[in-house]
Every structure is written in structure tokens, then in C-alpha cells.
Amino acid sequence: MIKIITVGHIKEKYLQDAIEEYKKRISKYTKLEIMEIKDEGIVEKEKALNIEGEKILHYIQEKDYVITLEIDGKEYNSEEFSKKIDSIQIEHSNITFIIGGSFGLSNKVKERSNLAISFSKMTFPHQLFRVILLEQIYRSYKIINNESYHK
Image (cartoon, rainbow, N blue to C red; front, side):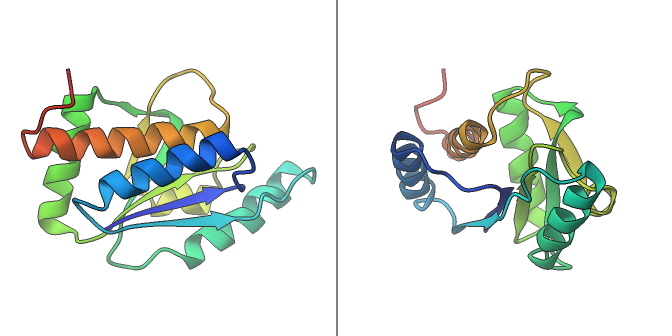
């Protein structure tokens, strides 16, 4: 099973539609859950990180393999990412991806992480990044199953 824990809600219909499309595609390969945490908005950075961090940790189970999305994380190309997903699933039934809020992730969440990855040194809107992550998860399953899609 893949879980995505993310800070913030999707308001834009075109992004909601893209997310629903990838959820449908991924469902052919694995169960997918997305948990949205309320963005704490304009408050002190540390306070927001701590509140969001506690809410994120609430959704993580002990058996979860946790992958945090961090700008300083390890970068993979699509083939490497699919191999990583495949190898993790051999030993762990749940892979949990975490997308932080506008301030990033709390130290407690980072400490719980099994792997920090980065999709780019660039900054993406959190709503758009959710679509990018789902597309790469879908691409990974296509690669793992030797199905055409990835070029």
C-alpha cells in the first residue's frame, strides 16, 4: 500500500482531476491513501512545523517505510526510483510519502523518515507536487511491471 501524507488541501479543480486520474491508474497495482493535514497558515515557523509534524506523525504506523520529500534529499531518475519502490515493497507492505507544508517538515518527522528524496532542487507548489509524485509512482509501477509508458 502507498500512503501519501500531505500538508494542505487541493482547491483547484484541474489538479483534483489529475489526482483522481492517477489514483485510478495506480489502483491497478496497489492500494493508495492520501491524508491531508491542515496547513497552519501564517504563524511562527517553528510553531507551524511542530503542529503539522504532530499531525503527520499521527498517521504513521510503526511498520510504515517513510519517505520524506525534501529539497536536500537523494535524487533518483525514474528507473532508479522504480527499483527503490520495488525493493522497499519486498520488506515493507506500506510505503508512506510525506509532503510538508510551506515551511517544510519538522525535525521529528525527518527523524522518523527512512529515506529523504528530492525530485529537484527547484521549489514546486505543494498542490502541483502531489500530482508529480503520483505520476512518478504510477510510472514506477509501469516500469516494475515491464509495461509500456516510460520512455
